[in-house]
Image: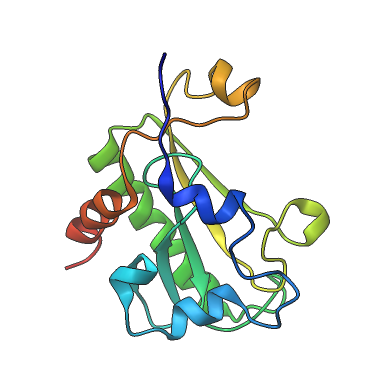
Length: 163
């Protein structure tokens, strides 16, 4: 029998994460922490930060998040939007180098009905992709296999992001 092990997802699947109506914004809390490694922060810019997704779809799944608590692109300043795109380009370069991925998904989920898990605070997902990575396990079994733990992903990304 084969076992899939992803202990970092335990808090998520058992509901031990902060509830959506707790009044706390997870991205505001992450952005204001001084514990970058604990929070999974890869890089801090002037208007945005890059953080490793704690519940990733693939190894190396990043999010680019503004420090400002805004829910839509319309609410973002030009400086936030420009820095987000510069960091997305940097993330693409780094993910291709580190993970040898031939493709990437970049995505905004704006609003709860569009799939935003944190609808009140906009963020851009950046995911490396490979041919066949949406296998039977993902499509039918709703399970993903991640070959790398979060600490390893964080160390790899921090080593190349911008020194």
